[in-house]
Length: 315
Length: 223
Image (cartoon, rainbow over all chains, first blue to last red; front, side, top):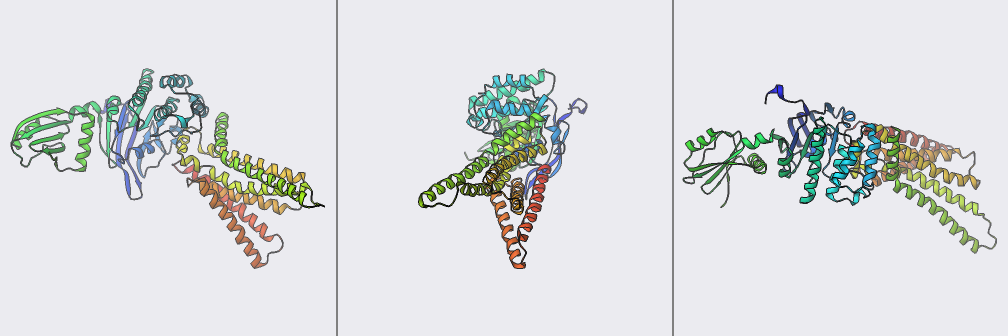
């Protein structure tokens, strides 16, 4: 993408590192998320996603590197950033004894004029939240919806969600995602671009919502690309070998596995040259190029990082 | 801002509910036990020499003692429970500055403790127990409260258990009292010397710990 056409980054991480003792949870991550876009932040458990998001919202100090969210360097300008950031944690952190309407009133009194009550009422209706129920009696889905409601009540520029749908049933997930789509779309309609960064293990959700995808693995950023481009340029090349011999993988191989005579290579930045390379360097009977889903691409990227050698699948 | 601190104080009042109830119940227990003891003694002795006021005063002193100890519970409950339940994360993302958050907690704790103390002191005054010349005793109580509250307040900014914070604060205060008393005996301090030294040590240590805990809370990143 041409730098001139790149919108300013609403979220910027520069060489961000966080250590816990000897463990490096986040390792030299540099990432920029343009304003008004939605980025899916994906990784295995323990990849460093939650740690990164907690640093972004000022709940954790980085060991090294710099963070800028909605124009505020974090954690130095945390106080100012509070009015520009909304955060939905992995489980509700609202006071459990409060009723839903009390939690809303509590936030409204603390945000003052920045709180958009009409919008909040509207979203509350859309999300079908029971106003008189205590937070501790809410279901998982309702708890996440309340967190979302409280996170967007002050119309933040940046919305950060940390696995908001973890452990949800299908309907609860659908309702939550519809609510999220509703709040992000409405914000775009009003002309103010809201940037959304959300981490999730539900890659179908990411594919449905995200404009770009960032993959974190063992604390390192494997890639950050527009989702469409990522899926267009990541392909699986399936070859049937003439005999089970050693294979020569093409440049750009992310992961490869052999099952009998079937050899599947996942490549990044796909080009027909890679197919030609396979054809010329290996004895193959047949070659097919297959599209991948985000789920498949993610698995192959992560497996490729964990076992760079060819994976032999027992058949 | 005004609405904000009122909301925070209402929230803290709810957070302090457990120590408030404990303080009220233990304080009331003293009066109940005194009344029962009084009635038993009244039946036992034919020429009973004591008035009800005497028993009432003993209950009030017990109430003062309980309130003093409860200062540790109020300090310990300040931050620990919120952090353990992750409510502190939620609060940390809301606009009020941490100084306002801490002020709200301090006000609610101070008001609760002062009201409880005043009730027992009123009983003491009513029974004629308050003597103008016992100022050292009142000073020791006040300074011990500062030590208990300041120590557990500081600990609760760093650990996630109100009970542990309060227990350590009580241990520190009792330890200081024992050490000062031993020093007084060893070096033969006159009259109220040990009490004055204990009050001074408690007031200074408690204040320093309170300030240190507050500064730590204000300047660290984690809630």
